[in-house]
Length: 67
Image (cartoon, rainbow, N blue to C red; front, top):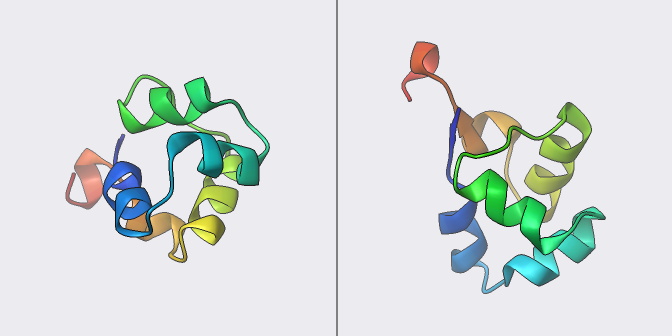
């Protein structure tokens, strides 16, 4: 699963640490998600989308939907 979290986070001027704090996870978790090493839970995906001001669908893509 590919994602646009890094790009969106940078557009908003957020550090990995700040985004992680807002979502209740570690900075390492955000880093792993951004580098496609970890797929977040559905709850975390919704939290990331909320904090980044977008939708889960806009953040994540798969091979089937254009990734």
